[in-house]
Length: 281
Ligand code: PGA
Image (cartoon, rainbow, N blue to C red; front, side):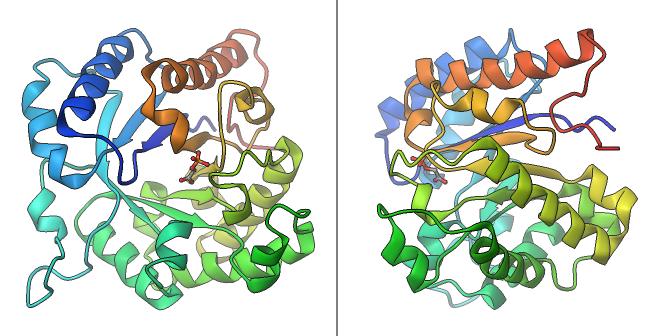
């Protein structure tokens, strides 16, 4: 089975409106020439209406999402935005990012509510899971967690995020392995390590929803992805794409990564080999 490759640019709390507008127009221009990859931009939500109004032609491959929202339709939630407010603006919603888990203290239970809310709003939830325990934090910059450490922490987060999700919604999910120790650090996680983790994700998803549904879920990696490191990831069968932070703020670096993801998909199909994210036998 072919899963469509995806690259997501998480702009975090960066850009002025002028920067955001220029970046979006430049990305839009290049996206016209790249067909084989979904390009998703997550700008600060306040810029979203202007960015979309400014784009007169937009290729279907270029889509937008929100970095955050509150999982209720409306109410007394000062400072929050609901997904009804971004209807027709966003197709994706980032959920469980390590910075929100750590800095904003979002819990597994709250993240699960956000997943349900995003699915009810017919969006694609991008669910991030990654090591956050004190052991991992202490080890940041001083070695990496073992695969076993990763499993106990991360698979718990994944199961919690997926609780109550219905099988008919599963293929809209995007699951991102996003280890905090690799975010914003230049710690390069090896392709085989990510592949091993994503295989475990697919097993967890298959146990809950069945193998056929699990094969349709896109699984991606996020953490210090750059033009220098992207080839580490495009050769792994379960890495269907990447979540990019810092490198998404430059059109040159972001689109170099996007092209690498798209070329990998195209090259694989021409040579009859596995495509990025193809089903393993
Ligand atoms: P980074 O951020 O690419 O700057 O490390 C990645 C992320 O936000 O997950």
